[in-house]
Image (cartoon, rainbow, N blue to C red; front, top):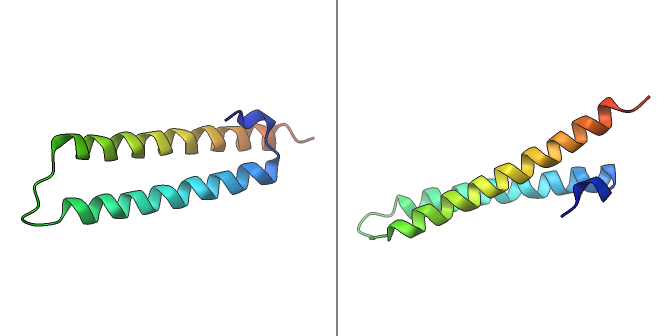
Length: 74
């Protein structure tokens, strides 16, 4: 995804989408990890962490682009 090519509105939409995905993923992770009596392989926890970090990185990139565009408005 080349965020510099997206419109301001598309960036806002993308940001909201990423934030919603992050919230859902964190809720899912919390639910799965709190299951008692359910053994989860270590890679499951690492998978959740990797996905969460990837989403957080994408969120920061979009936020940075939005801030850059706002600061460059005359």
